[in-house]
Length: 514
Image (cartoon, rainbow, N blue to C red; front, side, top):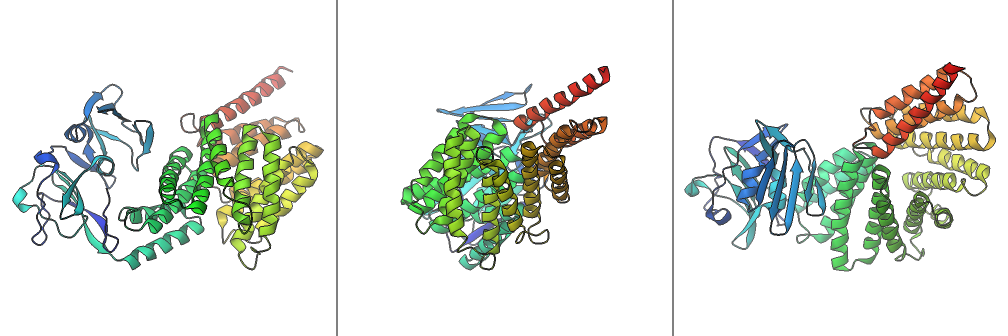
């Protein structure tokens, strides 16, 4: 549904007018969908153009049933089924979930959907001089509707025209791509996503498959990064959708190594999704995909890639409760990461060097559950401290905060081994350092996870200090976490915190009864 010519990339401009015509030279747009006219009201909400859902979908051949009580729309066409609900950003199309940029809206009893969704999913393609143009038009004066250039998209109705026309050069697109990639490396995921989406609006895999695939993968990586910070289910679902599109392209082209990279990233995304859904099928899917990726590597010359695949597989096996398999994969990752450190030194590539040490720290922490706990936890802390040599609060603030949180987790585990209260106090210091950067506004998920851990620590401290203060601090911390971890979007986390709060209240009641 996008413009096609690589040499003439296009951008969209929204114009609100009192008439429906687009003037150009002498090139006339002949007809809309079958000659029928669409009478679908459009409105603008928060700078987004919405179209009335029912008439637009009926015009496109769907049988539409509106449920006013539930404020939902159910549509059928041949064997396809489409369901969406006012206020939701999720649309169900057959067995696929589509995440909208903006939620379905309702105004004066009319349900509206973003017009981009209708255009992308169901827009009518017509052929004109062997070039593709996407047209969704309301009533118009046919003699006054013209279009200039190739591959244009026109969505017009009730005075709102969306016309795509200004050409971009290939060099401009590559400049945009370089800028987006730099944003992603700096962990500015939100801005990177916007830049990648601008590019995807204007190219297809037919025009330049290598460029298109690059953008698909990196926008997926950006969505994964966004999922770490906020709206986990929404963003990880976006990531999975884009990874799967890239995977389909690589399979069609028999691109072996890149296919493995996408398999690994997609598997990791399903593991993140499991943290939200608690559905073991997501973990099983993760293990299957990463194992497929592992089969393509032999470790020779690809130490870093192979290490990452073994690392992700180990994390998935750990979550599945397969400790022996997890340790085997994680120990293999350690060997490969240590080999990679010969190439990725602090001087040669400080960011990658820090990433390797960070992942090694995570590995040692997990292995400490089954092998030489104290030694592995000391190794974990040492690895994290190496990462901090490159990830400072000035250069990579979020990474800096993540490392301090991880050090806090290692000290908590150390306490469980040696029982020393000092370990918990050191953990608290590390968590507080991470909270200097993990604000509720900017990093809500990190904020909530950190306060969940702090609540757990106050609960543990209450066993040492026979004082109500620790229990009340735990309650306060858990409630801060619940500002983010609600029952709808984060059911697993919400259930965990609810259980912890119940435990705290039981202890308080018992204390009061003594």
